[in-house]
Amino acid sequence: MRKFVRKRTANTKNDILSGLTVALALVPEAVAFAFVAGVDPLVGLYAAFMIGLITSIFGGRPGMISGATGALAVVMVSLVAQGNAMGAPSEELGLYYLFLTVILMGAMQILAGVFKLGKFVRLIPHPVMMGFVNGLAIVIFISQLGMFKISKQGGQVWMQGPTFWTMIGLVALTMAIMFGLPKLTKKLPEALIAILLVSALVIFGNLEVATVGSFIRDGGGEGLKGGLPQIQWALFDKIPLDMETLRFIGPYALILAAIGLIESLMTLNLIDELTETRGNSNRECIAQGSANIVTGFFGGMGGCAMIGQSIINIKGGGRGRLSGIVAALALLAFILFASKLIEQVPIAALVGVMFMVVIGTFAWSSFRIMNKIPITDVFVLILVSVITVFFDLAIAVISGVIVSALVFSWENAKRIRARKRINADGVKVYEIWGPLFFGSISVFNQKFDVKNDPEAIEIDFVESRISDHSAIEAIFVLVNKYNKAGKTIKLKHLSQDCKVLLYKSSPLFKDVIIEAIDDPRYHLAEDPEAFEKGLSEYSL
Image (cartoon, rainbow, N blue to C red; front, side, top):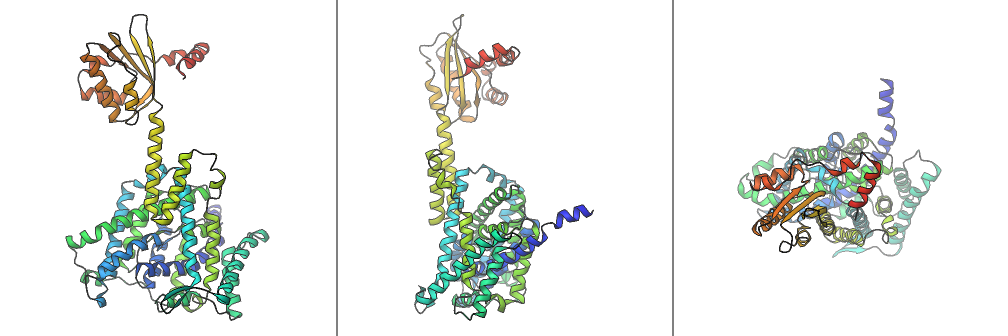
């Protein structure tokens, strides 16, 4: 029992300290994304708390942090604006349409988990993963540049003069502490120590810099202070639950669910690689969906996994569920009890932390391997990175997977081969090698000369695999061509599933497929010399 407890609590200190660091970094992110979506900052903060807590407890990836994200916020802008236009400005119908959409989004994500769609993230090629990481690192970097702007009459302008250089100095100091502290000791969380030291310097040095509090007020918020999340009963009074509402929020919910799952599962995959462990993607889908349903009912803007905060957590030593739980509860404590203290934290300290996240997230090895991997993989890597930066994460990943799949199909389509020989009895044998599927059908058909072939033909599929319906249809058409030419054709070494499908398609295959036949390679294996000779005959 003691051994079990020690094992469970071995990383407790790291989880708690890392969770506190993440909570501090969550505040400006959640507020900023709420402003992007056009809702009150507390809506973003409540989402970060509820989604972070639920996914930390029930999710499929311990150590991963979830909350309100920019990828979802940019989609929500149009939803909130259209919803507000459906009623009087004072009604804020857009906000309630958002809550209902988040609930529907969560239901879709749960269904994805129930039907085990999360496992498909394992099919994402490595170049797509590297492009995703690089693109997201660039997006995080660009998002932090907005912190170097200040509000003036007429909009946001870049900092200038002493204000700018003070900001740069504090960011550099934060990064220097995070870089240097691990070289002295690895027992202290460098991100949390950096934030505390820089905050102390600003507070006790009475420096005039942007803080979390000024950031919220500049965006139109009233401050970080708030109460516990409340069930939004008004949701059911203000929004009619009919087909018209479903037609309006349905497309938004589907897009948000897809983006949320893709970002969460890609982040899960990345954390798996960093920690050399394996999470449960389907469980994560269900947890994310459940969290969004709860968030929608309690007035949050919804969310998904956050790669920046997840990297902060992992780099800070957070490995267990406790780190995410501490982050969520600390965020709630900030809202309820410590809003005045947290509002004094300088934005520069949080920007410095995020810049270090960018450096740690970007796959710098991608530059080193550019001339060592296929040009198509280089193209996919760059394509995903660019689309992630300029468009959307979900579009980037889907585009990368499609391009990779097309390249794979094209390369395999060229690998179909046919070795031809004529036996002593005059039968012409075609020995097929390579995958037979929709991409290789055209090349496969070119291997046969129906008009000039002898009266008896035998096609041996011992080194080939029938992969899809297109391949079966090609075999069916080929057999009919030989039959119409009055020639005899036999098929050997077809896979069992292919034979079943061919028998179903036409009764003529009962006479065409040779069933009682041994694989010659089994006999060759009994004699080493014959086996080696056989291998050389079958190799190309």
